[in-house]
Image 1 (cartoon, rainbow, N blue to C red):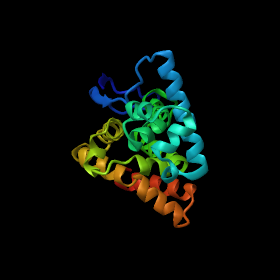
Image 2 (image 1 turned 45 degrees about the vertical axis):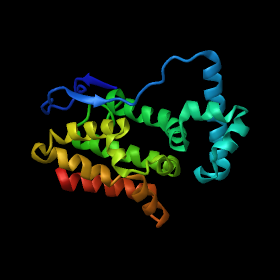
Image 3 (image 1 turned 180 degrees about the vertical axis):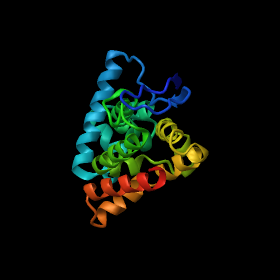
Length: 214
């Protein structure tokens, strides 16, 4: 769903406020019948247990249906496939991040200069990837082009582009996607597995932002 949202207030920051922009929101769950809600909760709780025990590769739809005590048909009707299940597991985590940069406290949320908000956004996404990176990878569609059409990517891009519009307006469209490319789960996990700490990645992201727009 796409909702027109005015750019958040800037608090103590005296920079210019851009025009309102369209921010694709992570879809919210519709109201559910009590039995459907119970099934959903049972499935997601079982999936979290299996994820902890054996990682995304160890989760099969047959095994999950057995673990959750639901029929396989219920599982497929609810989530479609493994990617749909993984997206549901990520939904609340990604929603919290989006709420943070729309209306949370500065510097992630409104009230800080745009460069500081860019730094905070990237660092928050790096933390999320450290915590849920394997799941993020498993949820990526086989058709990589679909990643750029997802509501989550659209929300992240709109936010980054709105901040860049105040810093590098001529290049905001390109830079918004180029900077998000530096935060993809595959790259971040590769860096972490290569021995770099999350704190080092935070500092590298900060330097990247300042070199591009500082």
